[in-house]
Amino acid sequence: MAGDVVLEIDRLTKSFGNHTALDAVSFTVSAGEIVALLGDNGAGKSTLIKCVSGVYRPDQGEIALNGQRFHSESVAGVRARGVGVVYQDLALFDNMSVAENLFAGSEPCWPRPLRGWGLVKRRAMLDEARRTLERLEVRIPNLKTPVGLLSGGQRQAIAVCKGIAFAEKLVILDEPTAALGLRERGNVLRLVRQLPAAGVAVILVSHNLEEVISVADRAVILRQGKQVGGVEATEAQHETIVSMIVGGRPASGNGQQH
Image (cartoon, rainbow, N blue to C red; front, side, top):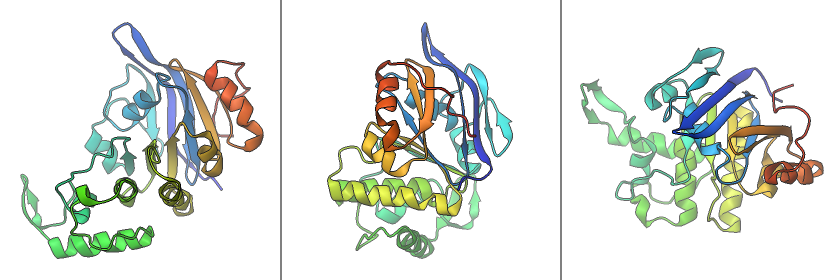
């Protein structure tokens, strides 16, 4: 069951030159809730998640995390607020090990890093990486293996784990099952389903409507930068969602939490 509002997006607007990528988009995501963000290419999905994650600065509107509003925030600042992001390109380092990828940018050091200096506690990092993967039920035989030698499904699972392992409030997943086989997709979706039990909110960007219906609570639909509707993510709403994506009549409501 969804809890308190974790993320509130209020009339978020972003333009690139004469092109308006987002036009006054507003919706909320609550703790323990999975909200799918849907729309065709160019709908504004990637721009929205990059505004939330600190990559882009919105032109207008506000974003609030746990009731604290901000107009502009760095990627590191958003991460420090408990937000994890898994981008479609995975953002992994092929020449680094599984453990090193999980902790890239936040390695445990001794003494505490001062101006970028510090000795990485590799044993502690390896042990924590093992505990993290076990908790998420991801099986990688050797955590010292370079990520570039793993299968596509294993790499995707590592990327998802990296995004969610240290996220306390919100996880944003951009096409987490793209280009995966059936078994590998099932493993990633299992990871997604585990998040609400810990009270973590999820924004799921996907083109696979069947997968969305299998895991999400609600769907917010964008088209050409505008928010055209929001409905429950159920099989009964399948045709309505498709209609909104391709330009049919908008559904009542705007995707806000009720």
